[in-house]
Length: 427
Image (cartoon, rainbow, N blue to C red; front, side, top):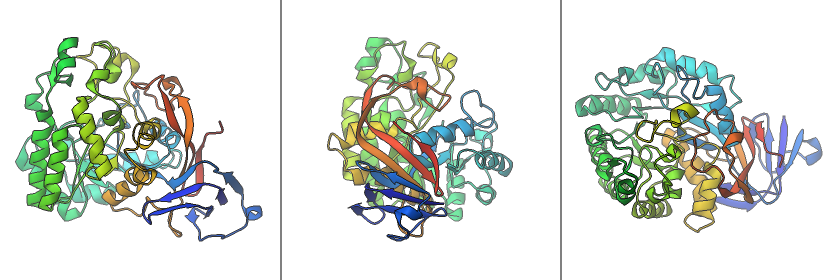
């Protein structure tokens, strides 16, 4: 299969390449320039006005499969990923059963092999059953196919258990993805602690809930030599803690989710709209500005979605009872272009680095690049096309988003994985 992508703006952060140039793909591999002529191609794609970039990589998704397939399946999750421009995703282990043994890893990978061509790289649990009591066998999980360990959805509150797991991860040379939340400080909180929470009469979650565990995890990573990746950072203090950790020489990276730079707690319209309920919660405007500045400065170097689908009946519960989380795979590109690129916070090159090249570096995989000889994972984005987000049209089973009806810029036009077109928007 030969594909020629013409007239696009090639953005390849792995080579700091920003050129108006064609891209040649043959048999799943990116070729050297002018590898074949247009009349020799099986498909010619006109990418005029678009960015041609390495396939996007999401380090943080929840596909709910196995065990919670009514929320999402690996198949529907991969379809949503393809629609969002993602060619590689890392599903978190908080399924039922959790991804804490080789058998569950195999089940995930078997299902993924038949799901739309998106590369699915599972994340294994830190502890058995995610109970926080006994570390998993990280070496066995890695041999089965995981690329990282995480307890995402919660923190491992026993520091000695977490330390032992970090030592295993360091020995196996895989990263630890950290959800930072001191559960003892939550006290039933369901949104950011502040003025808006008081106005809505809802219990708040303080910044300290996140920051205390962030500091602990950085210190443990420093002691164990583990590679630490901080998930869904949301506070101004987390920015300073990441700077501090990097100054100490900790092997440390950090991600931000689009909802945490696109919205603040002041945007929550009422105590009835649980599509604004996520964990960490939407923070203050001061926190949002700090997070955006950290992205601009490269302190935080990854943008992930924390895609968290839920059934409509669950989200229809009162704010204090509804589950945390929103979907994000099909809105991340547009929200990032609209809120960060068009407003000058990020350059297009930075955006693609944060959504492709840098996530590949975190995982230590040969992706996130358009260099000849590499796997042909490619996304075509039309940055100047606007549309209105329509949650009802999502490929994901989850429709839980606060961005329904919002006008945004940046449409994913084409997603190619292993040289095969897995999504095409013909609008």
